[in-house]
Image (cartoon, rainbow, N blue to C red; front, side, top):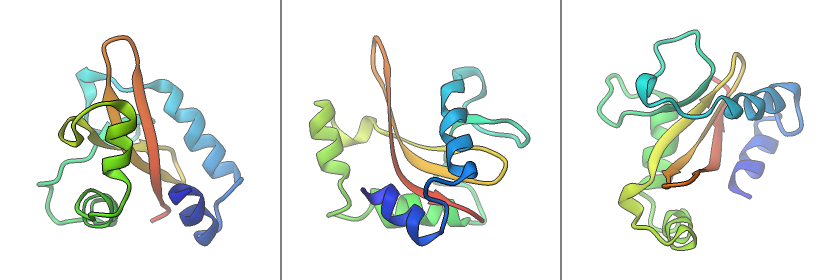
Length: 119
């Protein structure tokens, strides 16, 4: 619901950009290229210590990970894991970035999208 609310506000809900970003999530997370160097689509880690702090970092860390009522605890509880194992990620496409958390499980990965960034 958090992603839907933000996407409606940013006027990208049900847009081609949103659908393309969701499609790019199918590329999955690659341990060998965990961070995006530009020009690649897929799922990439967001580093808390990157400077200067960009809008995606502010939205994901300040607006989600560090907010007590953001839903992070509920996501961790639903996955039966500690919140500390959830990785901050972005799903990259040309026009839009989706922000979320990734849980790397033994048999499958879980991607929970919580926000979007059109900048």
